[in-house]
Image (cartoon, rainbow over the protein chains, first blue to last red):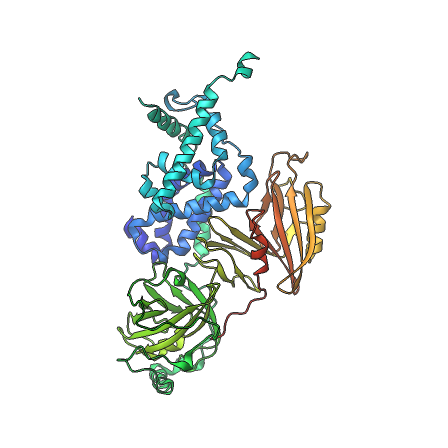
Length: 181
Length: 399
């Protein structure tokens, strides 16, 4: 990949097209998980990749291309969320076909609880949560990707985890009124 | 299995429910956009007109450079700390500190790492015509180069901060009448907003670089910046603004820019034109009517929107109108859907507002054009401060 990055940095559009094909699925996956909206994710992906092309000459270390692109993508997600900010309180949940989750690990109740709780998180908290749980990045890697102190990444992850865990717990507890009705 | 482990598994399983394949149309759109989009190599400006002297060749330029160098009486190479009062630049800039004070070589101060813009007059020595130019400090603060001065006159140099207000530059390669390794020391001063940079020369072995680097520059917010003060020149006319410092990236569409930070952002639209039907994705536009009042009146007369807080005001000396325009939360014709709101007249794009969402709009009459400024998120305490800092039209500082 480094060689392609070097070529793209020098203005080779074919090389950049190869990079786009190599990374677009991974980047789109991150964007859909942060934004929870296919259309917004598509816009964020496009914005990040076009910015990447324009700004590639400023990338000094080709080995950091994907981390750099992730950072651009997360910023693009922030921008998309701001641009259509009212949707952050009216999140459209992507349709889910087939089994609820792999190996039946997640129930419909849990999924709904997580959907609602995730919608309450800030974009910054969502980004940290997705980078950690979806990509498996460490807090140091997340901090590096987002350009924030490790402590900030840690507190965002802590808050997000606490919120989502509480949502599952609450939803699995029968409420007196609900059960009595 | 611990409770934490259980949650991690559930979180991963939940995240795995989302799609992971980018739609082909998204990838195709990127590749199409890239096929015509230039990379940022400081070529934001159109090509400058070069004077016929450029065809005279290097010898003529060199001779002129030598004459100019003599006339400028630059400090001797062995005494780079001698200030040159003739080049003291902006009188409003803060006073210099002693060249030896706090001398620690390193990357340039983060506030200097930007693309800087100016308007350069015709220069016979450099064989250049008049036109906009830029000075690019790379994001890690280790290099500086001029752009749009013509072949060989970029003077790409390795840069280091040798004092709080001094930088040292070492020319990377032969060219433009100078030689690799030529060393220069410059005084750099930011104004209070950090939007303007004044560079004066203390010494330079490359006299042509002196001609290019010295002067007053404005921070280009058309390029990535961690400082919120500067100017946008991608729109015509351009404008200057002061926003809080943040990690800004700017997006450009035709007659639209968005300076997007992690906390604040500013969207600017030139000559906004409403869509006739807020529920339709066909994006049919109402006939364009110039002026802020016509734009606001359209939304006032459309039952999909709530328009409040209408107030006339003055921005940068121009008549302006403020209005808060919100999309109705339960608009009967397309409930729970985004409303197609407007587009800049010359842009093939659309801007929407979600149900229940609202924008605080500032419409400014600039000559025959109407500019729409939106600071987000809505309700910022510093919204008016940002808007009031706008200066439009904006002229690049002249070198």
